[in-house]
Length: 124
Image 1 (cartoon, helix red, strand yellow):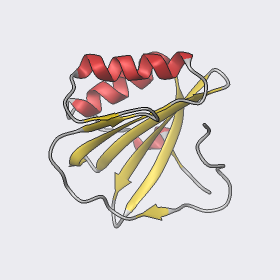
Image 2: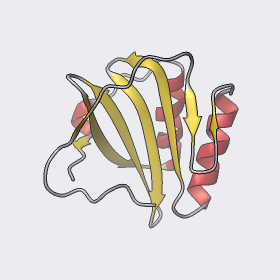
Image 3: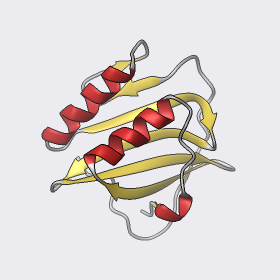
Image 4: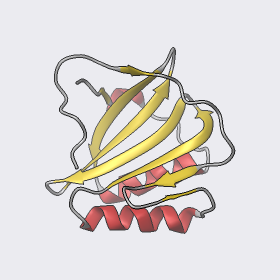
């Protein structure tokens, strides 16, 4: 699974309603009762399985980030942030497995303050 082609223009999504607790999902499963080790397991599976993705959604935006998602393709890992500002915009960067894990775990622990200059807008 590749994220949609990045071409033309930036897309703004509707803001997700606040909810209880974090949600972790991939194409097979969605769980709400999990620990950091489960996030690591989902990511480890994504790193070795083609066309996998992982999405971690917070109950409400933290430092403007509502969710973090990643996919691996052709040996590279793309991490996307859903940034809430007048709707939700996606920003992405390519990174290593270690950096991808750190981003997800920092987000889960409310420690992710993204350096937005490292990310580019996702354009469709």
